[in-house]
Figure: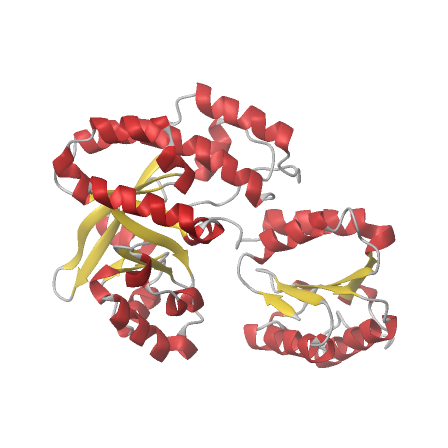
Length: 395
C-alpha cells in the first residue's frame, strides 16, 4: 500500500481524475477524522489508523492519502468487500469513544466513513475530492492562502484564457521579494540575497481566476511557463537597478531554451550573472534528467548559479548535490524532522552547510531545528517579520 502525506490533496485529485475512464473494481473509503473531537485526532492517532490500513492491505493494490485536516481517503483496487468492512470496523474501534463512531443508541454512525463504489459513484467521489483539494493547505505554495474557485477544476479551455490574460495584462504588482538570510547570534538576520516570485493569491484576484489552478499539476505547469516569461521581463529592470544583493528566481527548465531567456541573458551585464541564481524544482529535474543536465551546464557556463528547489527531508538525504552539479539546494521545513535529525545533519555536512537553504521557516522552532542540523541560511515568514516588522504585504 502506498501512503501519501505531502501534497496529498493534489495527488488525490489527480488520481481520482485518472480513474474516470476505468473506475471498475475500485472502491474508495473516506474516513472523516476531521470531525472527531480534538483529543482523538492527533497526528499520532491518525498515523495509527494509517498503519492499520497498511497492515490489512499491504499485499493489495491500494493507496492512502492523509489530508491536511486529518481526514484519510483510501482507494482500493479489488473485489473483497469483506476486507473493506474489516478496515472500517477496525478504524471505528480505535476511535470508539468519539460520538462520530457510535451514536447514543450504540448504533454505528454512518458519518464516520463514506464508501464509494467508483464504478457507479465516481462522480460523487470526485466532487468530494475537489472539495478537499480546495480546502487543503498542502496544495498551496508558500505565500498563497487560496484562490476563489467555486469548486471548478482547471481545464485546457480555461487554461488558454488564463494564459491569454497573463500575456495581455501587467502583472508586476503580483511580484514579491523574500530574503534569504544568515542568522548571526548577536546581530540577527543578515540578507544574503532576495528571491523574486509571483504571489499566486494576488494573481488570482487581478485575473479573476475562478478555478482551482492547482487541481491539474500538468496544466498548472503550462501556466507557470507563461508566468516565467513575464517574470523575466520584470527582472531586467529589477536586476539593472540593484547592486547590493544577489537575486534568485524560479524557472521551468523549458523556459531556459526560449527567446525570452536569451533576450534576458543578452541584456544582463556579465558581472551580475554570478550573483543571479536560477532555482529549478526537483520534479522538473527528474522529469527529463538529460535535458536538465544540458540546461544546467549551459547556464553555469554563462555564469549563473543553479539551485535545486522543492526538496523534503527524505529527498534531501537521497540526493547528491555535487554529482548533479547544483550550486545550492533548498530544503522545505516541516515539523516532523526530529526522527531524521541525525541523517539530515550528515546530509547537510556532505552537501556543504554553506550551500543549503532552509525555506518555509514560519516559526522560531523552524530556525532552531535548522541550526541543530548544521544549516545557516534561512528563508520564510519568520525571517520576513524580523527584517520587515511593519510590512503590509504577506509573502
